[in-house]
Image 1 (cartoon, rainbow, N blue to C red):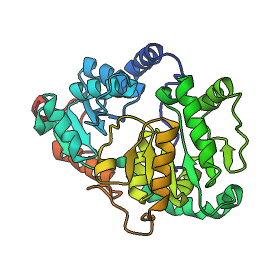
Image 2: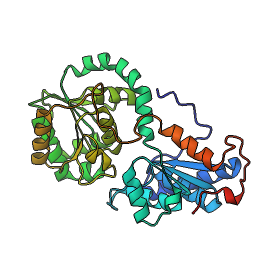
Image 3: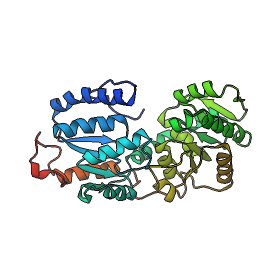
Image 4: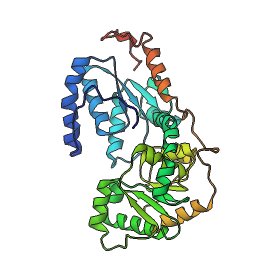
Amino acid sequence: ELGLPEPDVNLEVGSGSHARQTAEIMIRFEPVLTDFKPDWVLVPGDVNSTLACALVASKLGFRIAHVEAGLRSFDRTMPEEINRVLTDQISDLLLIPSSDAEVNLVREGVNPRKIRFVGNVMIDTLVRLLPRAEERWEQIQNQVNADRFVLVTLHRPSNVDSPSTLVELIQALTELAREVPVVFPVHPRTRQRISAVCGELELDQPGLQWMDPVSYLDFLALQTHACLVLTDSGGVQEETTYLGVPCLTLRPNTERPVTVTNGTNRLVESTRTAILAAAREALRQPYASANGEAPRPEFWDGRAAERIAAELRSVHPDIPGLTSHPPTEARVPV
């Protein structure tokens, strides 16, 4: 759907505990590096494969560029935060999506000469595929059957693994659905938790539409036309900021504070009372649509990948004709 080619190498590592998954990725990635001998290893984001591949590359002496570096929630209970912090410490080039990321990295002792402000690559994907998503809206609208609706995503353990918190969330959604239609594509893990915890709740509200997970394009179309989004996702905070759609993030913190200071995002406590109050307030206020004046942070313009390529070329001007082992002096200063 995204127009991506098949991967040259698929490590075929499935799900598992954090330790098992990270270890398995490291074991399977090591021979890939020794076979290909790349000039750079680009690791994006903050998932287990980000840290696992960075660790292997660092041990073998390959240069590492971290895409989406420097983001911090300052919550070490989040597995992603551990992945982010450790990957940044062993990377040679830190490609940051927003200016606050540089502040975080310098505070942690990272040499500023390693940091490059390139923008948000997730917005590149959104900009490229937004027209295709819009083409799908008419079909999706027939399924949603509402011109004005609230879109919901929930998956984080802090929300769905706590029975008391999950009950509060579902109560808020069912009550909100009496006032405005609520569309909820349910993550399989979240659905499992709801079935186990919320069996006694009245879930079949007329205005609450439970959906199976949808594709990226369909979800982008839903986001674009929603009057409000409730989420605990990191990426959705960024996408709604670009689209100009109000977003309530049901978390006590965010690693993307620029979506709060420069965007449409707001942090809300995961309680029924707080969610309903914030949602009702947001629904009373006008918002900028994707076709209007949406607030957009610097370099969230669909060209971050071009800037990343330019930064790599500035370090190695002869890309893509690099030798397998560039001279040591060509390294980004540490």
